[in-house]
Length: 231
Image 1: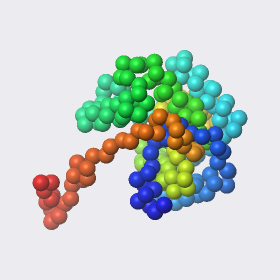
Image 2: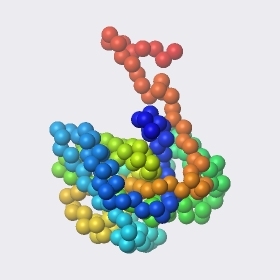
Image 3: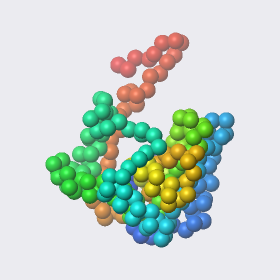
Image 4: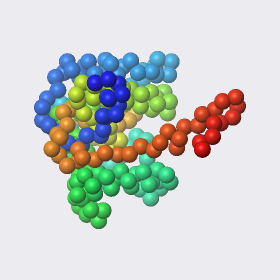
């Protein structure tokens, strides 16, 4: 597919087939993503690629920590549920309605089923590959920009190869579990996780399609010191 098709077809996939992804293919994707821009070409990212028995052990440990509420994150990646300002709160609610209500048929008051689906984050939604992205703390918050560029490039490279992904900030809430399982040193900040594999087209969650605001809602065009009208 061309680039426009790759970008348009990327989605957060929350159900995967068990089909393995060869190591050579993963290395090729990572090599492509490594061409991402970074401040002064510092390339502050590290990636832990987890498959097979190691992935199963990690998922078991994450699920145990989730069930006991034993969470600890390296940084505050989002406000608490009641702290989202508009327009972001409205967009978040719309996404939840499209995923849980329209795609999966889970009512807003069915907290048990909603939490059960959220819990699947910690088993990487059944994907055969889990990735944990970290950056060096010495680079400070600027490294998170570089990490985002790398992550987007990796997801698009995977999509172009016929694979699906889901970026997961939720995994960063259990940084100690990830450190213990993967040997992540303290000078590395756990940014997020990523599920990767061949999406399961028969799972109800695949029917979810999120919206995007129009360009006029987020872009301001400046010319000769002024801004073009949005009329």
